[in-house]
Length: 139
Image 1 (cartoon, rainbow, N blue to C red):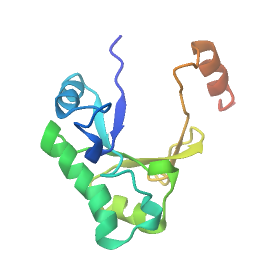
Image 2: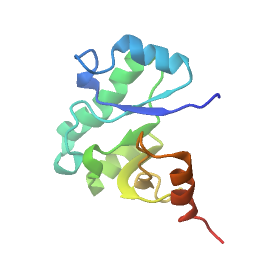
Image 3: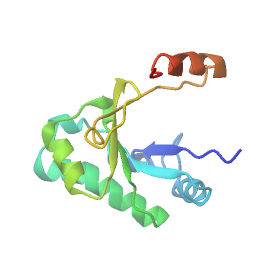
């Protein structure tokens, strides 16, 4: 159907058993999927500072680009946790958006590094998804 997806990957898990391989990332990227930043080790960036924070965010972005040839534009906070320092690190980098685990659908330029999201589980039916989205309808 031409659908695309964003895959938030933890880079130090790539090529580990039960996780995606570098070849998988290349295939996904070639099929139009975004390979996005979810840190190097899935560490809580809200608790990190300075070089440790930069390693988790920037290190993962560089590793993604090295494998796929494309720098990620999206970031997902591990466990949805963030800090002002983490938001600042994202704003000063090349990433354009970051998602939290707060439920919602409002995405604006001002909140682009604290975007809420809807969790769509494999068990969610199309009818349930429509009902969920209607709860956020305007007007």
